[in-house]
Length: 158
Image 1 (cartoon, rainbow, N blue to C red):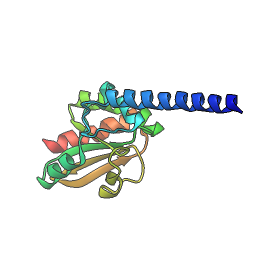
Image 2 (cartoon, rainbow, N blue to C red):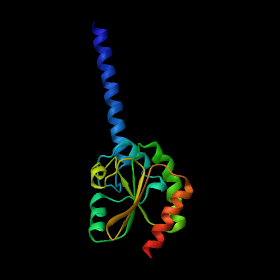
Image 3 (cartoon, one colour):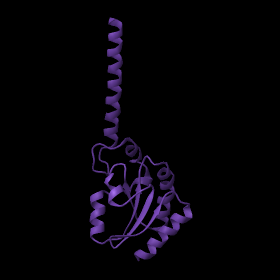
């Protein structure tokens, strides 16, 4: 019986150490992140160094931008969404080529965005003109569709 108890204690200690190390690594990776949060979801932490996810906008900043009547193109995505994982590496280079600033709103970290902006599916790209929604594109699209959408927003912003 003693052996079973000792084995159980050792096993629990090992799992506890693994959990501690994992949490510590996650905290270290998310230190100084653009989300302004101490505890990020694991999938978000994995994207912190990805060059395709460097134009993050926080909910308060987006709200201020829209309240000030500014134009904005906002990409609502979730790091856990397989369609977003396929779309982002296509969309962001197109935005760079078209010279359109695409703000990225992480719905995994800021779930209120689902309701605040009527997002039903990810990815969703929304064009706000003078602070109000003018157009949106929902779901996975072909490259030409993203390019046309961003090209139109660019023309309208001039």
